[in-house]
Image (cartoon, rainbow, N blue to C red):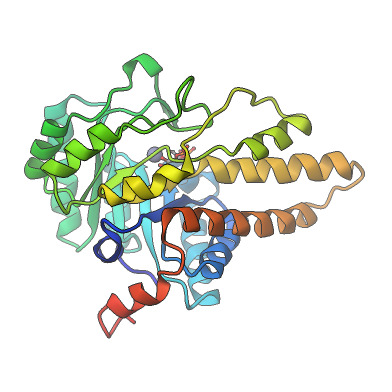
Amino acid sequence: MIVTTKQLFQVAYGKYAIGAYNINNAEQAMGLFRGCLASQAPFIIQISKGARKYTDKRMLEAIIRAADEIFPEAIFAVHLDHGDEETCYDCIDSGFYSSVMIDASHEPFEQNVAITKRVVDRAHAKGISVEAELGMLGGVEEDIKVEEGNACLTDPAEAERFVQQTGCDSLACAIGTSHGAFKFKGKQSLHFDVLQKIKDRLPGFPLVMHGSSSVPKTEVDRINAAGGQIAGSMGVDPNEYLPAARLGVAKINIDTDGRLVWTRVHREFFRDKPAEFDFRPPGKVFMEEYSKFIASRNQLLGSAGQLAAVRAALPKSAA
Ligand code: G3H
Ligand code: 13P
Ligand code: ZN
């Protein structure tokens, strides 16, 4: 059942975080739904601009609609990840998305406010929620690369002004993470001091943590042992998900870790079976492994086992 991010945040806020997982194809969708049902967790499916272009946005939407039918017990929201203004309007007008992210975080503050406010006005007219971003994460998101030196943490006072001026429904904050597999060079830790200050200024307001993959060492070691070259990678300590959730982080974005599972499965599969050329056998292994990975993340996010409580909190007509 497709619900809004707002409905999920209302139940989770301050207690646990909802996992927001990117999908690009049917195998990822199957693993995601299976893993969330196995762990009895509500979740958010995210679609990036790149994912919409990979096959066709209608293909992804059809996959999600089909998964909703195949797994009627699942409760999830559908969200545009890192949208620009034009893509946000396309998603708002499509009637399929529960929420959109307008990412104008690379613009100066006033410009970010103006763009976000325009998207908020158009989304709210249709009952759709808006996630915005303030501060800059390091790393690469599709066509925008932020050098480490230019990444900057969210300023708590600015965050308060930003939310007041834009009317956005949730805010992605930069608190030390970055996109991709290379997040930390030395100490692996979130800036809880900054997060606490943002929460103090925005009590009860859902915050979002991007760049939250944990880049498991076991996964990276197996990839490298099977011919990969991603030495030196490091992710977020997944034991910091729950402490962050208790400080108002209601949505935690995980994409890179899924790509690592895919890479490990396929590298090992073809290393061990060099004569194989059918994509279905490794695809089956991937769906199984991704499902297990998702269930393990939901445990760490605290969303595992919450499905019944979320269902009970939905309006009777929806549940
Ligand atoms: O933050 C970006 C997400 O990991 C999505 O990546 O734009 O390559 O689909 P993508
Ligand atoms: P990761 O690269 O850490 O998975 O972050 C994903 C993300 O923030 C998607 O918006
Ligand atoms: Zn992101």
